[in-house]
Image 1: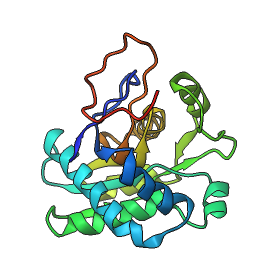
Image 2: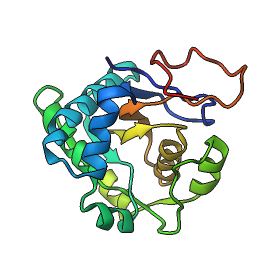
Image 3: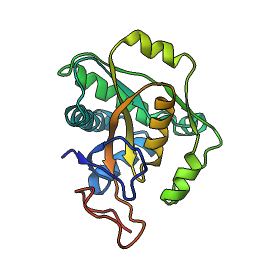
Image 4: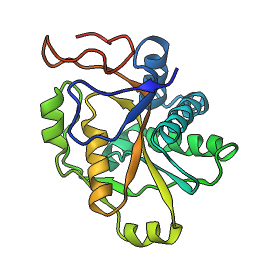
Length: 211
């Protein structure tokens, strides 16, 4: 079930994030199989879940009639080569196809790129992830002109998993710095990380995934 996916602590200025489910159990196994083992048969069901999350963003964040643009969080070229595919881009494309049936004009746009020197995020805490990603994303050449030609647009940043929110926040920053407003964040799954024993615990109604 799609639900708000605010990380704890939440990055300052992060637009509302929604996830289709907790990064746990069968959903976690499916995401990992699709991403790490290139199980292409999982793209449709996971993309459908991402479409559900995008739909919730549009409903809850006030998206009015206009072109809905789904922007996948970028991956390093080296990571895409190693894995053989860009999973987030594939899931985003699937979500767009699903949403076109019910939500009017929808398109995907790879508006962002990321520096190659960004370290792997695995094992990093919230502060380390934010520092690792600071300034890492940038818009591709000609983005302002492309978006201006589309007229009224609503942009949703899409990713497979939201953990600390650092990646989504950096993607959002790069778009907004280029004059592209972001409606919200949509992901297939989300975890809740806890930085302190007294951190707020009601932001995400999913069961926590370990400590």
